Image (cartoon, rainbow, N blue to C red):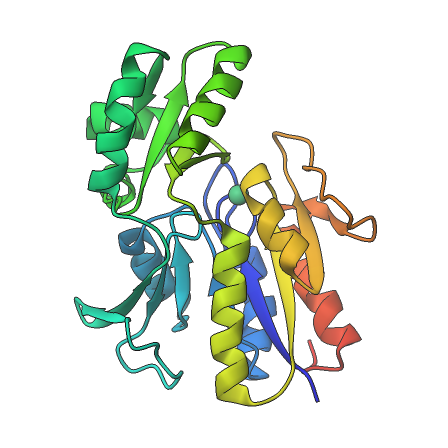
Length: 274
Ligand SMILES: [Mg+2]
């Protein structure tokens, strides 16, 4: 028998793009959790943001932060941890990328070639203005450990050049909902696959993965999943998912769309009842 694990993006997917609420999706994730289906967050957000959100939503699962840069496990996890998982602040961290300090060092010379503004250039007030986050939320969002978000202020052609320059330095630039994110050689898809293997090991059964996302930075995760779902965005067209013509797109946006997708898959898989 195959076990289901759900991997989900947050901004614009589980969380409403404008209000950041997840509440319309609550019945769906509670049904999943009650049926033993883990809901794993796979996000460009920081550990500090995810910890607070998990507490608010009542979820207690491993999670993937900063576009696949690291996987965090709760301190009391029953999953088998890899030997290089580092105990940090009561959690365990499996690093899949490089620390932000290294990324900032590599980025420094590119400032002379391209016009962009990085998170490290912004104060909390500017971040609040750019994201619409409350102060406390903006402080958590600025606690980046493995990536640097950028506001691109140069041309589209320069952006392509910058992507190539970063590629040569073994860094990647991915487009999120509001920022471009400079990350190490990682992505949400690789991180999902890595964590799926951990679940596989623990469960001993075959795993079916469901993935939900709304943006370009979710494409790797959606491509690598068994059941990919695009959650409709109120602000941009859905990205193309190469070689996955069957990918479903929700009719609703954000958390309403999330609930619609998860409810249909739970029914399809004969799991729980809503
Ligand atoms: Mg998103």
